[in-house]
Length: 316
Image (cartoon, rainbow, N blue to C red):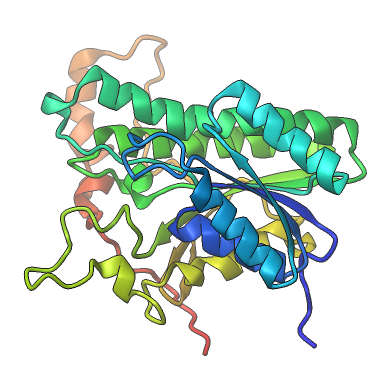
């Protein structure tokens, strides 16, 4: 019999009715966790309002397979909804061990064409949508230090490398990395870890501009099952980060791309230009710059839009 790596755990999965979130919620349940499935059921732009049927469908699928789950429908960035999600976990299942935030929306526009609403909506959904449930989850864990906890944010390579037509999306995902690292430092004393996953998978969000095909066929996300773009490929990494095995890992960013898991390095100082005086002489800075900070070019110039992973390790 296969090991259930999350046996006895209680998890909240936001975005739990979406492509990746639903697979993670179902896999968590298969691995023994009791799951609170949170979502609005809206479209990828977040413009359709709440649709309880999508959350209910995931909950019923988990229950039909013998798992335990309950749904919470609403905007997780709303403080009352976020508190309700945590309260539901505590009152229904008696505790909380994992908070995984996989929710999100996408509103693409070049920076010079972006509206204030398109900017603010992503900050609300992505950043406040991580802050709100984290606040209430960590309030519980602070009072229950012996339990510990796992926080997992879904970010994007757009937040690591930038994406030209997604300034709002890039900014909020970079913000998630800062929040994750802050949490990792602040919550270590309470036995709580916080990490991030940058996924590469075919979902409704990545279908934008790519489907349906010219012959009227299905969009890419509907053809991803069993391929390296299948959202189910992200579930094993999410299980590991939610398990006891990851107790010594915090503040890290992992990429889940196809059948590969990658660990990103942390930002490091690459070069420095020094002055012995408190105020840097401007002419001296201009003179020294090419042989110091400018030597060898700059990181963004050396970073391809989709960098190849080094030291890849595959499994079959």
